[in-house]
Length: 322
Ligand SMILES: NC(=O)c1ccc[n+]([C@@H]2O[C@H](COP(=O)([O-])OP(=O)(O)OC[C@H]3O[C@@H](n4cnc5c(N)ncnc54)[C@H](O)[C@@H]3O)[C@@H](O)[C@H]2O)c1
Ligand SMILES: O=c1ccn([C@@H]2O[C@H](COP(=O)(O)OP(=O)(O)O[C@H]3O[C@H](CO)[C@H](O)[C@H](O)[C@H]3O)[C@@H](O)[C@H]2O)c(=O)[nH]1
Image (cartoon, rainbow, N blue to C red; front, side, top):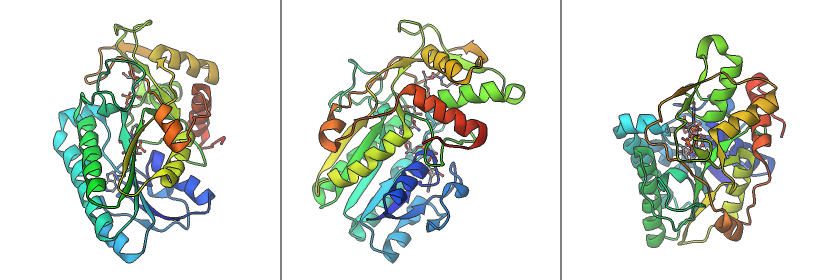
């Protein structure tokens, strides 16, 4: 299969690129490197360092079987403070990409959606039929794109899958998380262990949440399990249909439980301080992954301990275990 990976120089896109290559696919990467890194694109892979709105120039030059679309602005707090770039890139950029996909008859699209489309859930685990009430601009833009893709598949033979990731963690196939502005719990905790002088203790955003230990609960999923789901989505996609599926483990861990697991894996204490709740954070997000099992044949294999072991190896010496 010939695939264009849009956002392939980023964290998740670079792992998926490597898995596609390992499975013998022909991969091209498009990324503007606004949050990704050119050196995350494997040597020999054709790489276009351009904005998503110029994707048509790449799709015009070759026949592609699929586009996998990871490019987005995805900092939740920033999206609330500065919404315009989020609507511009996430929705406007994807609209331009969809136009190019339609014009050049690319048959299949896999899109990175998010649990943030649901907002604060009424019930746990969250199924794909749960109400979508995003609590921040980031989630709203991703929901708008999901709706745009649904409309597109109704009007054309495009086969599309939106994968609603929960909390992605870990490293694999020589790639991992290396964001300059890092907001995620696990890399922030690892950074607090090793960069004591420069970054200081990690802030726990509130210990007064309505959860058993007072800290928020999330569903962590290994980036390698996630990558496999993308390959399975390419096969499962049906012309004229838009499948929307959650990708999570189905298990929830509190911030305190994650920090305890990090201390067990690393053998080191995570320096922490307690701050106020972070705006836009829900108390509890845990996925139902039944639909992904049924429609993609996907079952996550790796645990929170694997994610932390792999993130720790990558953080300390850029090595990946898997
Ligand atoms: N990391 C998570 O836990 C998580 C959870 C749910 C959903 N997602 C979604 O998964 C996708 C990938 O996330 P990630 O963590 O790898 O983020 P990332 O920032 O590492 O990767 C995104 C990539 O897109 C590129 N990009 C951004 N704007 C672009 C533009 N206008 N033109 C071309 N390229 C552009 C960036 O340079 C970057 O390489 C995103 O769409 C994100 O919203 C991530
Ligand atoms: O320094 C930190 C970082 C995080 N947290 C807490 O740790 C939990 C997880 O936070 P992350 O920032 O790691 O992840 P989020 O759940 O906020 O968001 C992630 O998952 C969401 C869906 O679940 C979206 O998809 C989003 O893109 C993605 O970043 C939250 O309770 C947060 O308050 C801290 O206490 N301190």
